[in-house]
Length: 109
Image 1 (cartoon, rainbow, N blue to C red):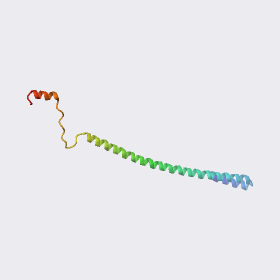
Image 2: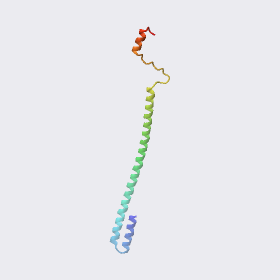
Image 3: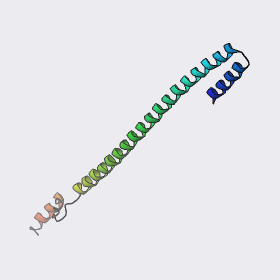
Image 4: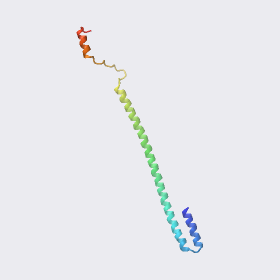
């Protein structure tokens, strides 16, 4: 928009016979167009970086969920492993030494 306005102003100056002002406006217009082109390129680079970061975040989020699930499974296996094993016979708790002595005194009942 600014470049178009500068061009229109340069045309008016040229029609009015002010060639020097018209030339200055055209130079400004070229600088404005160059700045706009650089800004557009920077904007595209920023969009590309944003897309790249979003993809990386998505990958990391997926990986974090996988690791969390893996940790949950490991915790579940550990909990199952520390409890009684299915089908295994539980060992009797060790006998109280005082009760064992009384049994011996009573004749081994």
